[in-house]
Image 1 (cartoon, rainbow, N blue to C red):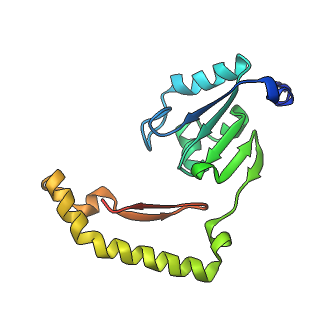
Image 2: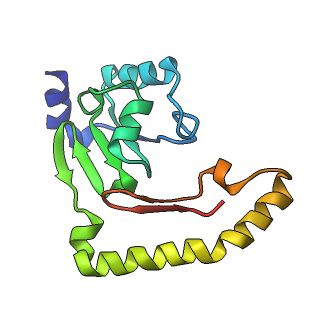
Amino acid sequence: SNGNKRRKKESGTPLILFDVDGTLAVPAQKAAPEMVALLARLREAGFLVGIVGAGDFEKQQGQLGGPDLRSRLDFVFSENGVHSYVGEKLLHCKSIVEQMGEKCWHEFEAGLNEILAGCRDEAAQLLQAASPGAELADRGTFLERRMCTVNICVI
């Protein structure tokens, strides 16, 4: 396939990496079809094309045209590169829980939840100052556990 030919000449082929949120797509939104088509045109022109982002792979896939994303790109770096693919082949993935160990992870998670609870009042005050009438519950205050990272949003 064209992708295999491209990988065989990687050392001399320019690589173009795009950030997903804020570059290819509005954060947490689907990319315009023109952006998805641009990635394909760059590959057809002989460039290696990849994406990098903080989101997990499923989020990136949803933003960039669906379930065949890895077959349409040469490199995918999800969760800030900790979950990485070269084409459809997994290059690297290690869960944060595996790295820390189950016991240490639960202690870490409990500490993060404590921090969120402790700053909730201050976060609510800051939100009110910025957006009178807004509520934290409407904003999606969260502690999101991903495979390789933790995303914390207090406001």
